[in-house]
Amino acid sequence: MIVEIQNYIKISNSIDEILKNSPFKLKFIIEKTGISEPSFFRKMREKKFSAEELLKIAEVIAPEEALLKSLQEAEEDFEKDNYYTHQDVLENSKNRFLSKYGN
Image 1 (cartoon, rainbow, N blue to C red):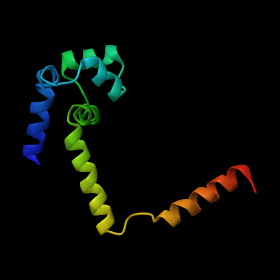
Image 2 (cartoon, rainbow, N blue to C red; image 1 turned 135 degrees about the horizontal axis):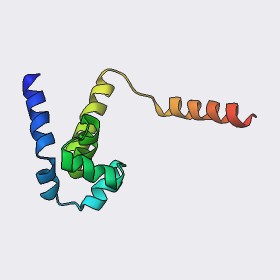
Image 3 (cartoon, helix red, strand yellow; image 1 turned 90 degrees about the vertical axis):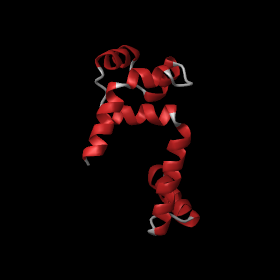
């Protein structure tokens, strides 16, 4: 746990360099994270991004890593039988539609 916290601090303290070396423009990163531009620049200047905000930034600037993480989570869900079949989704959609719009 200590190593993870130290890594978080290191990333948080060097986020401006990380963003500078990113292949993406800051405007694109700001847009994709949903953080307002003034807040984004203030947080970057003060090095005060929350863990959730750093995660959003990481998902934007490292899309391959985000995709791999998503695929690993999906595989784990599948192994745990934590998924819906196509038939389940259709039935759920039908029920939601009928409850909203009636017969």
